[in-house]
Length: 348
Image 1 (cartoon, rainbow, N blue to C red):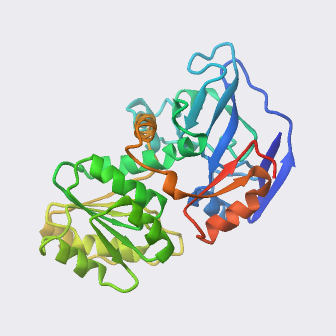
Image 2: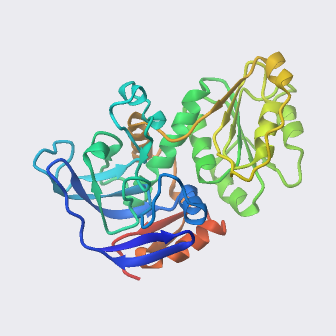
């Protein structure tokens, strides 16, 4: 099979490898579509302690089951499935209580488990016990691959107790930020404010119909958000951007008793966050973080995509065959579009 192998930092090599073997407790997935995630780029450039080259990355994926071990009952040959990233160990207290994205071992597809930038990937027993969700013919494989980031958005919104009548600010209108506009509406938000710097991404984000769009290049983000909320501040602020400034703005603007979710992680080179603790003290606001998702949330994401309640088609701006994955990485790293889909079975 053809696979893109990370051999070293900044070195991704296309190789012909033997088709992987499965055991009695695993299944083989014919990967049809894999979306490039920002974390794939970070691993490509800077590495990760859980990724040991040579390694196959890729965790936002969907495909068709082509082989199953004799003990496997979760899937059968011919099933169309989407996979999530966070894989439960099944033994630690977090996994036993359903919080697998907080697993003590922190297994993940494309990290310790060989990922989806290949024509085929093994779904081991651990993965089959976790985020493997059937998809219907109504959903394309490319759309289904985006269930993984949507599940992460669901996790973030659940942690801020989003409910009817709330005002939500989303800082960063990349792919997940745009999904969050639709998701906020579904969860009851009555006013959604989007903040973005890039004109190209802002143009795509406008298709999602937020109530207010703020250009962070030319406007005072905190002042505008306070103005749009009658001086009270938004009930919920999500930082879907890898920006220290966004985190600081979120705390500065959030309403009393409001919630801030630090959704976008920061690079190791980022400066320390500067927040006056008295701001949190007197506002009685809640600061949360979120990362990854659970199998339950992945199932919810697939259901929302199948019903078109969260739209992802406008976000898919580039398509490449697996043979052109280096070009796909360059497009993603250069922020030339939104979501870049690799079609694993296509030959370029």
